[in-house]
Every structure is written in C-alpha cells, then in structure tokens.
Image (cartoon, rainbow over all chains, first blue to last red; front, side):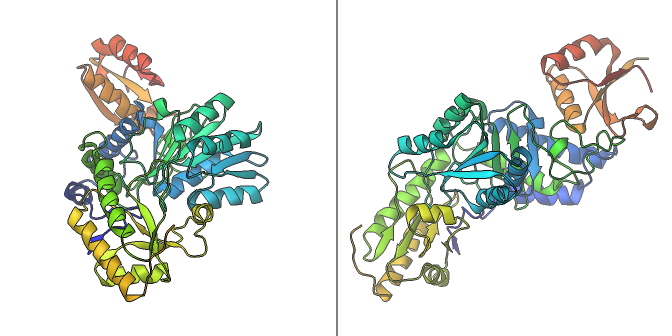
Length: 385
Length: 74
C-alpha cells in the first residue's frame, strides 16, 4: 500500500519508535512519578527525556512546560476549556479543525462568545487584518491552526501572534499539521500555548499528544486526580505539568514519541518540508495535466498536503478507487467543515493527499497514474479554473 | 552526615534538578521522600553531597527550580 494519508497519522513509524515502544513495554512499563523502585524511576526518566526533547524542539528550556495528552484534540480541549470561561470571547481562524471548532461552539453555548476570522487564501495581510478587527477587550484567547489540514496553506501565525501580544491576548497555535515539518520557536514566534499530536509529524505512536504552555497564566484544570505530588492536599497542584496531567501516563507511547522526536530532529533544517514540497509539486504538476482534475491550490505559503477532486466523481469514490489501486488517501470533509466552507468545498468535500518523509517520487507517480485512470474511466473532461 | 536532601514539588522538578546538577558535574541521586518527612504527601528528593549544598542551591536559584525544603537527614 502506498500511504499518502500522513495528515491523519504518519505511517509507517520509524524503526526506532517501534523498538522504543516495545523495549519500554518489555522492560520498564512501570508507573512514573509514583513509586521509588528502579522500574518506576526508569519509566520516569523516559517520560522526562521526552519532556525535555519536546521543550527543546519548540524553543523552550523548561521541560515542566510540556504536558502529555493522548492527542492534539485533548490538548486543545484542556486549553480552550481551561482558559476561557463564561463571558469570555475566543477568536479563531475560519479554517479550524473540529478539534478547535467544536470546543469553541460548546463554549458559545455555555455563555461564552466565539468569532471566526476569515482566512484569505490570496493575502496574508487580509487574514491578519481579519484577526485584528475581531480582537476586543473581552477576548481571552486567539487560536489559529498553523496549517490547514485540508488545503495545506500556512497561516501567518507569527503576525497573528504579534497582534495578540500587542493587545495582551493569549495566542494558541494548533500545530497538528506543522509540528515536525515547520520549525517552531514558541518564544521567538510569540506563541503562548501550543497543541500538537505526537503521532503525526513527530512520528510517535498514536495515543500521544502535547500541550505546551509558554505563559505564566495557567489554565484551570479540566481533569483532576492523582499526580504523585502533594498528595495530602485535595486541591489540584498549582504547578506544571502536574496541574494538567492527572492519572497514569502512556509511558510506552511517550517513550516512542521521544524516539520520534529524535528521528525527526535528525533531519536538517527544513529538509522534511523540502521533501514533502518536492513530492507535492510533482504530483500537482502531473494532476493538473489530467482532464477533469481540479486542484485546490492557494497563493499563500503551502506545505506538502493538498486537495483535489475529479469532476463528476464523488470524492469518496475517488478514494475508494485509489484504495483499490493500492493508494491510501482521505476523502470527505476531514473533520474541518470550516475550512471547506472557506474554500467553497463544503458540499463536495475533497480528496486529500498528504505526503510524509517515507514517500518517494515513484509513489507520487503511481498516485498520479491511478488518478488519471479513474478520471479517464469516469469521463472527466477538461475544465479551466 | 555526608549527604543532604533537596525536596521538590514533583518528580519533574526533581529530574530537572538532577539534570542541572549532572551538567555541572555534581553528584546526585533521586529518591522518594520518606513518609515521615512527607507532610504534603508523596514526593521526591534529590540526594547531594553536603559540600555541594551552596553550589547546588545557587544552580537551582539561577534556573528557577524551586527547592521546597532542604533536609539534613531523614
């Protein structure tokens, strides 16, 4: 199977990740931060190692700022629900995934307010201006996805962060599609809160995610419980990571994530992005020559992932036929109705292609050949967009 | 006694302290705090040589790692 569904989760996982998960399960899958025996201490060291690597990867030198979650969605929920209360306003982009949109929608049903800033795919200036217009005195939190999980466009997050800094509002980045492929320095880029999955661009196992907090303002804990610290006190600890990290951690997953971060850090500066862009450039070039194929390209910066449709063919059918041809892609709305509405594809959905570090140019060619065959067999006709 | 014990809020801070001490060539050993001294409940201490006390505390201060208490013995 040729796997071009890396935006959902990267596959395959690097050998060192698989090894590390297995070694942890076999050798020291004890409960970290709870007991004092050797196995618990080794588990604790493995967790701390990952915490340190994750902090360093995003430009922080304090590992306690890294909170482990089970995915980016959990991280986003912890932050959104923890920072914004009744009466508070949240501003997001118009291209957010449901992992942001749904908690914000719920926030609006609980006495809060939610505004969406229209992303302009032709102009970063207009996108930044849209955010600036919406930030008011009661705005508690501004959230932007770094990269659209449907169209691959990169939002001008440093500029949005600068606006937030100027207005004294917390800025939260959803780095679900950028962590590991775009260099992010939370201090330099002005990011107060960062949420990322461990199992996508960081090449860790599923069941891992990160919430990283680069501000002294801490959120209310949404989940409370055992932390292995201050146990005599019924109140949840007021320090990180314990404040937001109750219950037994996914030690094997976290150890695997450390190996994934090590794997991705081994690439040179920008190397991952260059590889993915080279693949997508060739695919987009070849697909644009196929009669009936519509590419959804944007004029602002992009990553390797992109969307297309074959005229007259349901996107899910295209994905099914690609599956039959041995190519894995994702079709539909990609849990991002806002992004589809922004691009005018809410009714049709799209077929998403998302390359990863293990994809090759030969695989890209095979995807294009398979798409061409589907388009020819289903009567796609040339059309200029 | 040859050793003293630095007590931290959590295992993460104890690890941070140990990493810092190691980086500066100071010996340390992390362990659970004995129950009789654990008035706030469970926790971890980092055992260091008594002669390293000032250097270690300076390091913690400069790295903003809060030492909750220094125990001479348990």
